[in-house]
Image (cartoon, rainbow, N blue to C red; front, side, top):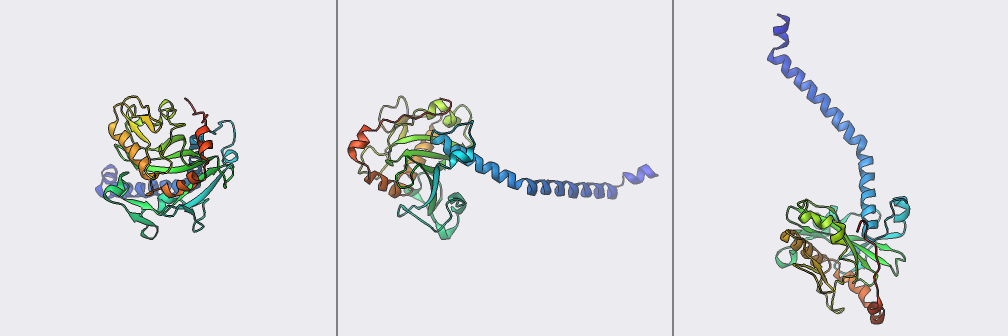
Length: 272
């Protein structure tokens, strides 16, 4: 009789419900307790990627200590001017991309990166003297084959010469589009120029099939045409007046043409 009673549907449901409650409490408690550590890890990952794209990451040194050489600034994208509306230490433009008060809808030819909406303000990171930076690190994002790709692009202080590119979030196919993480592919970028014509506001940087020969060309990813197109589109979007174009124009206007011609980039890409 006792065994039959323990197998009743009522008791089974009670035990199952109690087990669900206990598991929910355990999972919720763990999620809340670990949230500070998760946020700390995300922050370390962001800083590590910025150090990597700038070519100054030293695995033997403390990340925070190395990152102290960078100054974050919030840029109003439409004007290209710095803004004090947000705290650059905490502002995350990506989090505001759907806030109608500080973002805008993109459509048609304006949305070549497939973003749908774009925030009005974005954080840049300046290496060295903020008034005359050695490098400018820009956040970039756009659609790849399987979803949104997010990364950083580093430029010299002239606002035109590329130092490096890195992606820290994407769902591209390993061995194909996923080769955006390959140090050998990333090693092609240093020294490439965004604008072949200093007076142009239309970026020339692009991925091309076959061997890239131009100063604004990089080899496309083999077998990953859509991902390659996505990389080209996101760069041409974020480096145009729709993105950081106005901001970068300020740096390009300050460069002495003779100094630009004599620039000889010499950057190390980790793992290359």
